[in-house]
Length: 574
Image (cartoon, rainbow, N blue to C red; front, top):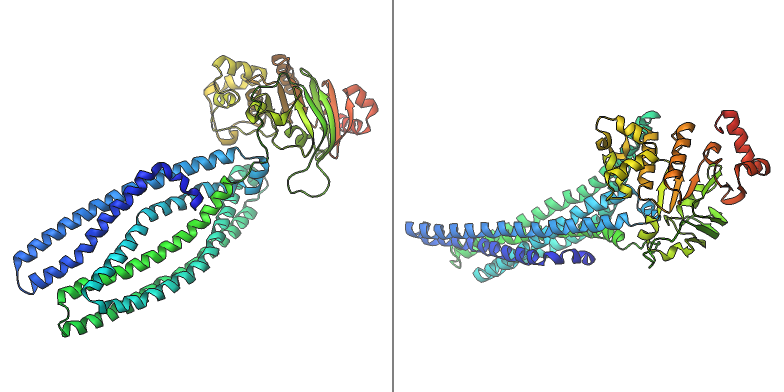
């Protein structure tokens, strides 16, 4: 938790003012019982109306002053907690979007959402508690004890006896609940993960009639969360009444001692009322501190989960060269790759080739041969674990990630569109693109036709993930997004799989015509997609087994010929 205090530094003034205002409220509350005792001893017992009125007026002033202090404390602590939450969520989001794919895979989307929302809310609650309750309870405890001792030291005996009992009860429960708090956060992660998967993949769930199985999976996760909540609830059920029982026993002891002292005229009736109220405040303060310790235990778990994200080290380090590559030449030199933590054979082994600027190159092979993994190394979504990759003659690890990726346009098979408009999605590739540039990119990706046929044209709203558009429309918008910045290298990873052969050919011709100097890298399953490439690389089990033109590979490469023959029979190789 100490590591997160730096997020409170900009709000130091509110952190200081909140306890100061709480001190005012506590002082006013401490003065009220003594004034009540004065009213009883000097007013009620002596039928002195003026004393009752004057003391009552003073009590009212104290009450208004305490009210003002409480309101100010709430305002100041809220400013501090909300400000910290704002900065903490921003820092977490910045960290998440800068993470490598390996890191996001490790945390999972559901867990990241839980940490950014639920755990941050817990930390905000703790800031409010620290600046309010953890100031009020100790001050009220100390002030009440001092006043009780000054009035009648005998009455402090039940309080002193109750304090260690309360402490032992709280510590016992804290140790038990800490484990459950960590487990509860993990259970919330599981629930959020299932919800996120089902909401983003609702079409898959319904297409395969998976509603029952997914509801069962959710019920299991939800039941696990409920069981953990019940386990913590059992502890709270035990703790609450136990603390109340100790409090009542202490109150009875105080009243017995007070009654004896009244009989012996060691204390007045009004003072008994006041001391009883102070004793109640002592016990309530102890109970409040106990529950605050519980919340701090939960906050410690939340803080650990947050710092796990903030302290995570991105294995992909940005270089120092902030200049774009001089050209789109790409060279792989004995490149190998294994996913972090994976065992067995490497995904890629001994990959070497050179791509010249302005050429069109293609990678083809069976599913799992490593095609998509290979092209993901170029923009450094992952780093090669062996060998090196150069662009423009310079090792890609020397470039800053911004400079490297600004020179590369990437289109995936299942492109993700953002909520907004079609135009705003195309401008993702170039934020300051003029309207003419947006239209030009749409024309080159053969998307302008269907876009202009829509009622709102380029201002047509796009739902999250582009669910209101067809797969082919999403792919063409994604291609327009990738080419609008005129990158040196364009990677099309099965980016036309949802298009028919005629539209696909038109898109590839238009993309090449609009970007004559770009190095185009195509990953595909269909021969028709790659047959016109300057060079085709055939991959098998993470290695390049052959390379050449379509005609050359048709004659010399059995693996390529098998793909060609199977697609010719199905009519896919035209």
